[in-house]
Length: 160
Image (tube, rainbow, N blue to C red; front, side, top):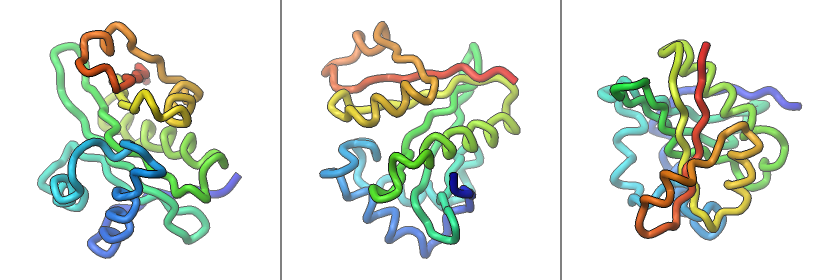
């Protein structure tokens, strides 16, 4: 297994993120349904203290990025994982699994107990398998309330 590190996103990373963001033929809607211009400012802007955004590096090479955000709810905090992208040539090597574990460890330093939520297009079979194999449970009861029914919702409760 390779070493994996997170680093803050800086301005020079934006073109690479935008490239990945536009690769819908490969990633589907892993980046969500918003245009890149709508989220760009949130990736590097420190005015959003609940954002957890990182570039993912391995052996000196940038291989992906993650964008998540905490929300406070009445019951418990929610870590919403908006985006987790690992470059296609680096997939199926355990990087995504390591990145999710590292992201959760960072989130634990902010909240002792929380729920992680990740949305996946129901057509993204690789994504569906990934979140299931990462220990997330699919919330069919919540999905059934959505219209149209094109999104799968995964959740994992974290208690430190």
